[in-house]
Image 1 (cartoon, rainbow, N blue to C red):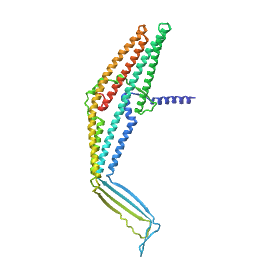
Image 2: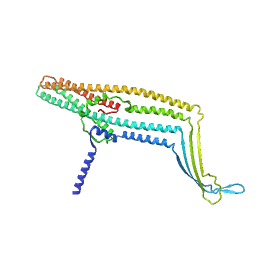
Image 3: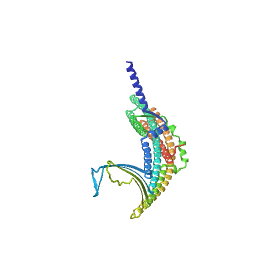
Image 4: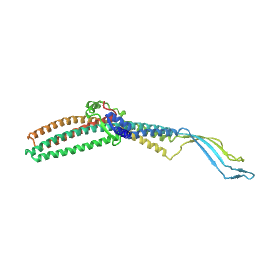
Length: 429
């Protein structure tokens, strides 16, 4: 019996441990760090860097010595070579050989430079992906907090409406109010319940997206340890407007610079196709016969060779290849100039968006406070018999609209702040 009790207690403790492992309480920074470690998209981006490095070394290896060994076995089935006065037997033989070769050309050298650029681009893309993931986590973290606040506001509205409904129902029972008054408020309550349920479902979808970004199991529980008031700091966010836009810090700009350099190297590579290419090799061969009979061995044991390939005439194909590469380079320069200007314009637009969103948030916050006071005032008047149930319904509808506008303004601020941070490649100070 004692063993059974002990096993039961251990099972309960183990279940509690597993449950604890599936629940995470995270600050925003902890959530971002967790995503950097476990996000599967970032793992793939990190592998892309390793792939680029492996490809670079493959290209470098083409300019280094290549060594191969061979073993050949020959069986002539007792054949003898008839030379008239005498015969030469052709016994079974084994030939051992080794070859060392090296090839060098200008295109190989430029190819290594191209692979270096590809490696740099993979590094930049990884950093960009890390920034995008942390920004996405930040957006989802803020959105979840905003939705939770929305749910709290709606639940508070529901509580007030239920109080009014109970009061109205009691008034109907004593003949002071009509049943239609209670019905109007009951419809308002049903609408509020629908809004609450819809908000909760939206909140769960946000948490599902957050689980995906954090690399968590879909059934893991997440608890956000910070509040929207802690994170929403207008002064810090507005400080982004005072920062200079350094194009070199922008990942898209960095990638574009690498693309321009890549196109330039393509021109160089096509030009090097006019240049000679050099190949050299050394070969050692040893042939052993599986017989003591006299035979003839015409295989030289050592051999060295050099080959110089000089391009002479290609019917214009190399010339056109160079022209094509030059045109591609000019296209990249045009794209580079356009993108640089568009990034500057985008910075101005995102700065305007951040300013406007904060102005809108302040307005919507004041509006929500005023509409809340109006609703409370109408509710008191309704209880005193001065206002009608229709007044309560209209006031409740206006309150819901004001709260929705406030929530949307909050989300607009979050979006504007994160978009500007992403463009500047900084965090709000």
